[in-house]
Amino acid sequence: MGRKQEKVRFWIPAGILVLLFFLARQMPLYEPAPEDPFTGTYWYNPYGNVTPGGQWLRSNFHAHSNSWKFITNGKDNTVGDIVTTYDSLGYDIIGVSDYQHITDTRTVVPATGTEATKNRLFIPVYEHGFNVCKTHQGTIGARMVYWNDYVLPQTRSQKQHILEQLGERSELVVLHHPAWMGGYSKKDVRRLSGYDLFEVLNDFWISEELWDVALSSGKPAMLIAGDDAHNVFKPTDLARDLTMIHAGAQDPLAPEDVYRALKTGAAYGIEVTRSVARGSVVQKRACLDALPVLQSCRIQGDSLVVVLSGKARQFHFIGQDGALLKSVPAGADMAADAAGSAHTPDNAAGVADSAFYLLQEQDRYVRVKIALPDSSHIYLNPVMRTMEKNKKPPMPPVRKRRLFTIFDT
Ligand SMILES: [Zn+2]
Image 1 (cartoon, rainbow, N blue to C red):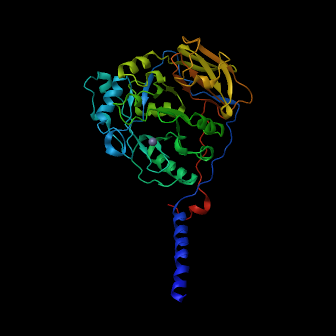
Image 2: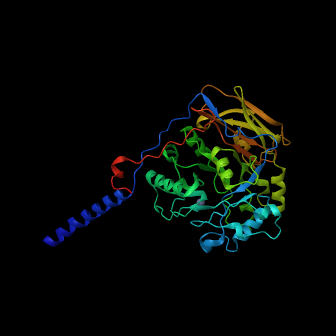
Image 3: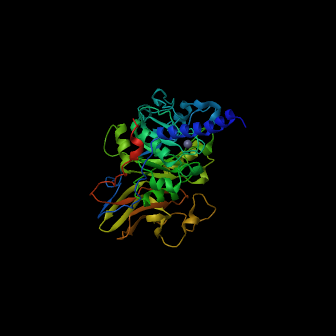
């Protein structure tokens, strides 16, 4: 073998090693976030300001238009179509979350719209991510698009880096459909920080179990629910999962009121019964209008008391590690209770409009999931242990590893 060949054999791998080293130096590394469950003598209640008769905004922040043509579905599905359809469904907030693009919906006024819908609140949103594992994020109150992403399966530090960058460019950062295709693993959600909302309910994937993992490791991730609609002409894309946001007393509402409500947790999710999945817009609207709303969720003495404006079939109280703490009425198991299952309950008319749970010393958080007579489900945000009175426990700070911050800008 000639000397020249030997040289080549040495330099190629050496060159690759040097290249890999510099690539690694380009990417910040992060400390894993602490995994400590919520602690403290106080309880934080996200619904502290909710009073009976309060106004709730019907919202969807996750719908895609035809802006990416054949890559996403629904070639005829324009921004105007999305706004008009959701307007007919009685939505107060209509987000068009195209990939890497903030869509201004203010120019679109549905022909049938009333004065109120013409002055609809505009909340800028978009979906970030173009990688192979569907590690996607939503940004709400987006100021500008962040164009970088890691295309191959991402390390935890890469995921943290993206969340940090999005946080600098928007009001709220969402983990979109986090359990879908392993976009975020259990280990990820225990160790990631620096985001606000968890898309627990999404038309493609329900991430309820993963949410409990995040909450159990002390991440105060508040819930959001979205259709992730790709074609509003397909009934199964519409009004499947929605977020109800407490409007408070402000009139007129400003985007900041919505951000505050989502961040503090004054919102809840609805998984709409599968029995209207293929229904018309009119049928879906009637179903949504008939659903009871949250009247109050209070801590009275040691009890967590939830009151709805109508009857429910069953209330489930869920705590640390997703444990079922109590069901009201007792007996039926949660599995039989999946939305739209063939199971026909005896108590189809609903049994009670309220339920309570006696908070225990060992409880770290308690959330309530409510099965309604039509098999729709309401998911409330948790009450959480906290060190400071009336203060939501904070997300742990995002910390870079020291060694890798030397050349970092
Ligand atoms: Zn997505």
